[in-house]
Length: 140
Length: 315
Image 1 (spheres, rainbow over the protein chains, first blue to last red):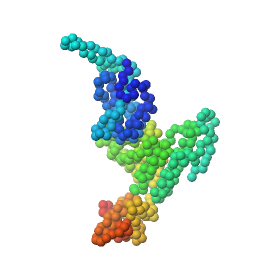
Image 2 (cartoon, rainbow over the protein chains, first blue to last red):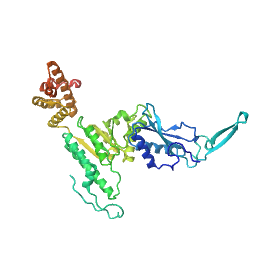
Image 3 (cartoon, rainbow over the protein chains, first blue to last red):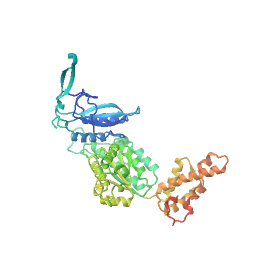
Image 4 (cartoon, chains in turn purple, red):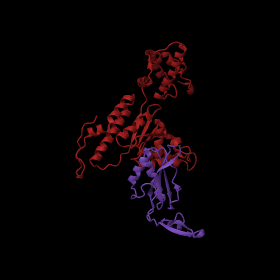
């Protein structure tokens, strides 16, 4: 099941050139860019691992793209996203966030029902991928 | 400068490529002429440098034309080394170079990131690589100007982290040539030693440009231009005093060409302000604008014998 979160996630995966142009758009707006990755696809998993520090004062997308390249090499089976932070209001706010790499196979989620007090039903979303320990999910 | 040259398309190319490229039109399209003329007008002297820049510009233009006709073209190596004495305009030219490369389409953003050793080399193990990479990322799409580049390599200390920065630089200079142009600058003799001990750099740098010292006449012209830009003017006697000043200053240690003259000009302005203040009367526009010879002759350069090499008291 395809994970859809962030901008463009209902579109086909962006090509590298499309990613570069989105990054350039963000840079032209004066936003800082950060690269993050994870292998836990749960939708409530907000804090992904940072790949290095967010990049400030860049002028051209080439710098971000080379970081993205090295992140992909280090984490071939992970989700990777690019975040753009806008500091206009005095704090870094995410203005744009999109997935730039996803695992070849996304096994999806299982819905679990738990019976709570008074026969009340509680629902829980369980990603199949997290059955395996972190680092050995998605093949690699 | 360029005549219209018609280039026949190579026989192997039959498809969509045009048969000729009008170099003159390409030249006009890039609006490079304006930049080069500006360079000629605003920078005094430096004839060999200007000639080299024109050569590079023509070469890049021809490379563009070749590309349009479908010649196979690896991106040309543009990394440069500027060598010359202090104050000969290396940084100024580097800034112009960035916009020239931008106009010709060999630099996407046309900005200049100016760094020295401190910005590239870290203080402890593992600190250098992220620092250098961050600078490189900031410079992507533009020009990275490394001032006093020979400081990167410290042969007397083999544990020096400069070597790490050099290796990263070399790698990026080779693999991301189309993203980044590196300009190394420094004093001629020390840069020669630097290149000698880092042959990797020498071979990756396509253009070595040597900046000659300014002549006395050129320095005078530069000072007058500085004055003009700041809306000052030199009286006839002040010009004469400045002429003498240049001759004397050149013989003294720590002479830094145009930079010394800029400092001298700044100090003359201070003295002029003091002199006007002591007049204690009304001043008019001419008085406010004019630097007199007393403003220049009050300099210590005239007072002290040249054997005194206390650098801090010069100018």
